[in-house]
Image 1 (cartoon, rainbow over the protein chains, first blue to last red):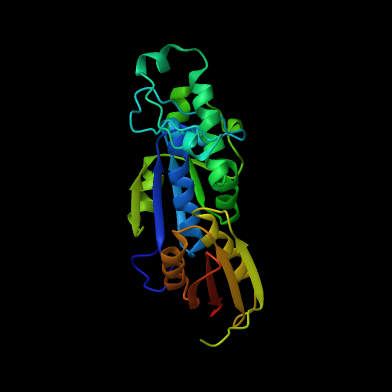
Image 2 (cartoon, rainbow over the protein chains, first blue to last red):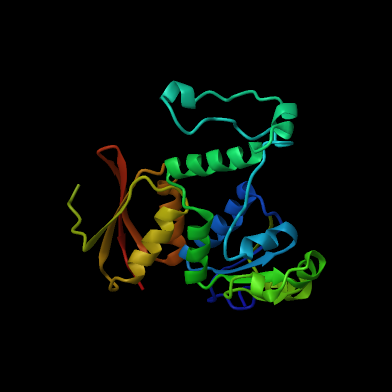
Length: 174
Length: 79
């Protein structure tokens, strides 16, 4: 219990509410960085964030409605790679397979730059005993079963997470 | 500047956040108290991260410098 005991490790409480590839990174990166500093970490996976607890991660990303996303190619000569392609939203939303392409390109970009994959980051969190809580309510709503998720997670509700977060030094909603 | 003798070397070249601090943490845990780890990184975020990490974990960051275009850190395990 961090707040009541000054010698206890710091605690980080995160809510992961999104399941796209771009939003999968922040919770796992923050959790593993905090774990590396000896902090206690707990992540509450709710809504689409719950999909990040599946054994096989299939998180994808879309540029549609995401105007902040740089559209750069992770291959070719430097000048080519620096071009930010202005592709109209209408095309990106209507060309079949565009999301799959964007997902593949994003993964390649991250690999080129030396960023770990979501799977690797999640494995590091498991190694560091990061507490991962799957939202019971989301499971019921979307029809998921306990067997659909990795064994290292526990199932709980808002009260479970809030109790943990009450004694946390850092509480973040992602 | 005097030379620091390291007990182990960890190369995190090419890795970006959070890998340098995560791997450093793992490597330090496998070493004895008092031993020194030399960590090499290319991530520009590593210098401030390593300072924060050493403050948080209580391990001593003996030196943070640049060598051959890379960032080099000497860390002593304190506890």
